Amino acid sequence: MKQLIVDFTNQISKAIVIGNAYSPSETSRKLSNVLVSGLGGSGIGGTIAAEVVASEAHIPIATNNGYFIPGFVDDETLFLACSYSGNTEETVSAASLAHEKGAKIVVISSGGKLKEMAEARHWDFIEIPGGQPPRASFGLSFPEVLYALHAHEIISKKFEKDLEAAINLLDDNETAIQQEAKEVTEKLFGKIPVIYAADGFGGVATRFRQQVNENAKMLCWHHVIPEMNHNELVGWRTKDDDLAVVLFRNETDFKNIQARMDINKKTFAEYTDTTVEIWSKGESDLERALYLIHIGDWISFFLGEKKGVDITEVKVIDYLKGELAKL
Image 1 (cartoon, rainbow, N blue to C red):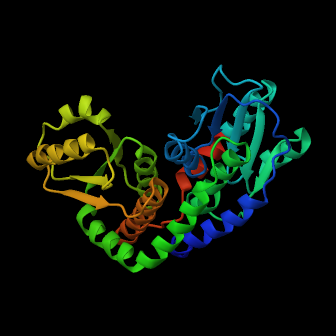
Image 2: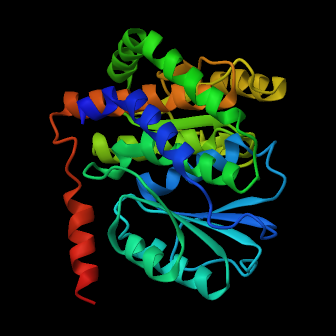
């Protein structure tokens, strides 16, 4: 797992080459909406992509994390089926339903059943290298969502310059990123992380939670601000130093969000002795998101290492899939 995190920027570089090689089978179809379907490490890229391009995309981009699809899906829908293995049963089901509705389907995968379906049903297929845990292949899968959106004229290609800038940013700051990750790990070890991020970076917070769950084998939760200020904030009523707040912050966050976080810190301090702020770097939201994702990946790795767990294994998920296969 360690080497896969080290290779994050190399993955992005490979993804840029793959994305530029993709040519959609049709471009004349009118598109009115986009649905990105996927789960876990395969699906989080769609969530983050939708947030990053929200202000630019000229049609709605929704995400889907289940077996079924919303009623709006029709022949004017661009449906992106994201499954690293190509065998995620929920995504296979959703793609089949989207096909029945006449949606334009693009599969982003390393192979599996979705590749077979794409070949048989003449769907577009963007193939990424396989053989890794889905969560450790984010740098390969996430950019392809952006390339698929661009190829169908939903967003410009500005994101590519941002991806290239992010590669340079992360490579230049790699030593400092790992050092900060180790320092944060010391503060989080033995505690339950409570992760908060600004609206628009909820996907980044979700990604960190998922990585802590899988790599460190720990429970934690996340929320976004300002929504959290309308409900969860009231839940901070009991002194509990087993909780550790993690605030993902950007200097470009809306001033009211900045103020809310600063005020919230005072509330957190009444009930826990640990609040950690992690500030992003970068000139664009895409760069800042990738910066926070990368440092979050390292924190999850160092937590798992400090706990002495097998960071790569996901035996309980394998068990679940095995039991479901018996149905």
